[in-house]
Amino acid sequence: MIELNPCPFCKSSETYVSPNRCNARIHSYSLNHYYDLIKGNITFTGNSEEEVKSFWNYEMDKNAYD
Image (cartoon, rainbow, N blue to C red):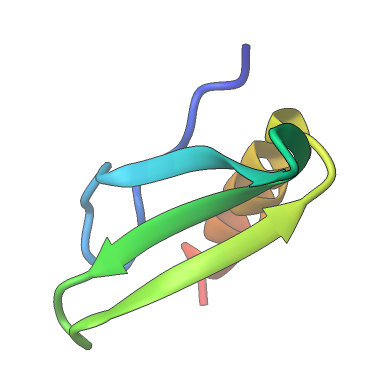
């Protein structure tokens, strides 16, 4: 299982992955992070839980040094 990195902007680890269902079947996953500074959400959607977690970690690592 992939661990999520904390957000490099707000340092919060309040990030959640949830399945998106259609007709009682899971068809994709969404990763949601509430970003208090802008009073909004950062959301990624992908085909699997691992995909959205990997994308979050990649984007957060990439942006941590900008």
